[in-house]
Length: 76
Image (cartoon, rainbow, N blue to C red; front, side, top):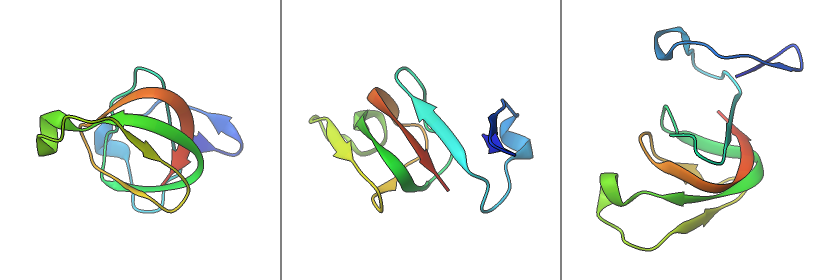
């Protein structure tokens, strides 16, 4: 999560609506949301069965439990 321009780790239970989260290579997206900035390649086959990797950019929706394969992004 980004708070006061500093990246911090918080538990899933502490996440609130409109928090700005940060994900990068190797992370699992913790909650459903959308990309605010940056771009990531994600693998969502565990959630949707989709076998192809998906490139997500600003404005795209992302699903919880999907894996970040490359990139870095911030989202809400």
